[in-house]
Length: 292
Image (cartoon, rainbow, N blue to C red; front, side, top):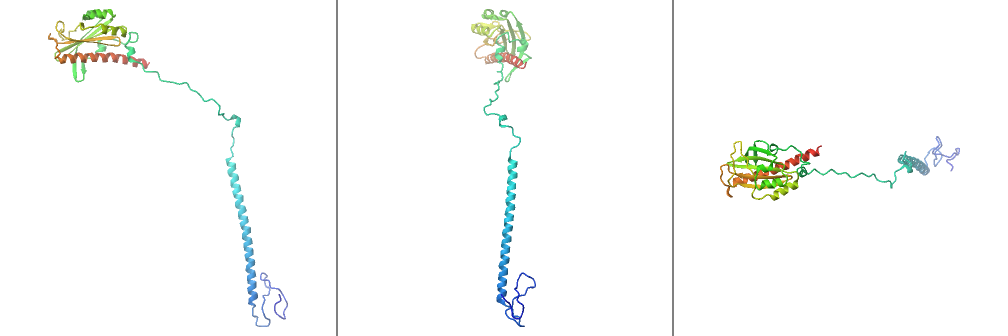
């Protein structure tokens, strides 16, 4: 493209400093060629846009590359950190077929039975006397209080028995006969405990006793003789190697009838207390043996 008249021809470069801009006419009016200027401006704008787009693409590629490298680096670190270290060789790992440890079954020993200790003389070795079976000076059963009277202990069982009982005791090997008397409200009760070597002998003696098998009443220590000639109430029972008997009546010599409930109650209370005391004897020996 040529510009103007009468002057030297030169090409205008919008990016070159001090280059001559195009004008549409020569002379002195120097009116700019607006069409040429517009074309130049549009060309300049397109060039800059191409540069900017190109530069942006390069930057995007650079940023994408950096991000990709960063991601690869991060993944590499994670994989490295997840790699197992210092693991034993596969041969040294425990096998699934290895036998499981076994333990011997254990169980607590069964508790000792108190009945075993009062069933025979071999185990029933605790001290025995009228005082150990019937301690203290009073006996309370529920709300009823009995006063303790005289006690007795003999190896001649027949001498402390009456009626048919001496023969029963002797035949079954009675070794001792312990007696004690309690009183309350004009009623007296004597308890007699016959001792045998085994439970079987005591049970046999109980079975052989009849209505005429009675223990002799025990008087003394302020208790008058009773049940020597009068009608009295008697009971017979056994537990372990012991057979125990009661005789209850009036020290006044009065006969006992079925209406005398106090006499029956007193005899039952003393029989129940005797059973409990013999059972406690077995419990105490079983407990002592368990703690040894």
